Image (cartoon, rainbow, N blue to C red; front, side, top):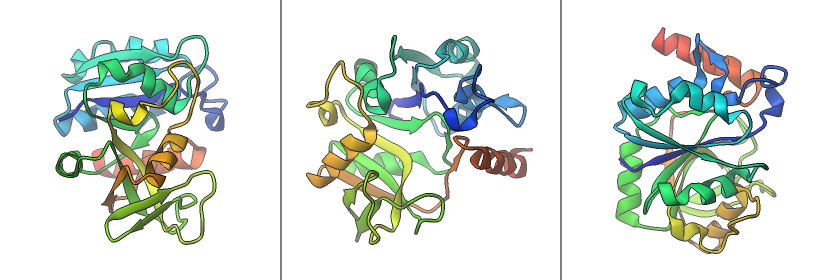
Length: 233
C-alpha cells in the first residue's frame, strides 16, 4: 500500500473543553486514544508507512505512538512549527517523506472502507489527485461535490450548490505534482487545492457507499463510540 499522511494538527475547538489540554487524535474513544483505532484499521489493510502531520499539542501524539513499532508500522512526524499551516500547508511540508503518491486522511475520521480498490483505481486512471466521495444529499453535512457518471466535475466546499448530491468522504490520494503551484511557507486549506484541481479536470473521483465516522464534534464523537462498541466490543 502507498504511504498515508494523517492530518492531526488542528485546534479542535468544537470539542472543547475536552481538547483544551488534549489533541483531538488523543481523545479517549472506547478506552483508547482515537489515533490507536485509526492505526489499527490501517495496519489491517496492509499499510506500513505513516506520516502524522502534527501541530497543536502534537508531542502527546508522538509520545503515545512513537515510531509505530507497537502497531507494527513505520511512523514518522511532520510538525507545522510555530504556527499552523492549514491542512494543505501541512501536507506540503511533509511531501518529501511521502513519495510519488500517498493517501491523506484526517486525524478525526474513521473510514470503514477497503483502501486497496481505491489505490488500484488511482493507479489505473492516473490523475494527479483522487477524492473519495459519498452520496450524501445533505445528510451528514452540506453536500459539496458534483459527481456524475463516475466523473468528479466539481468540488466546492466554500460555495456548494443544490445540484451537488455528494460529499468529500475524507480520504484522498495525492501526488507532489498536485502541490506544484502551492506556497512552501504560507498556510492554505486542502479544500481550496481540491477546488482548483476539480475545475481543471485534474481530480479523479471514487464513490464509496459506507458512511464515515468522525470525532470532530460532540455528536460525531458519540456516534463513533457507538459504532466501535457495536463492531469491536
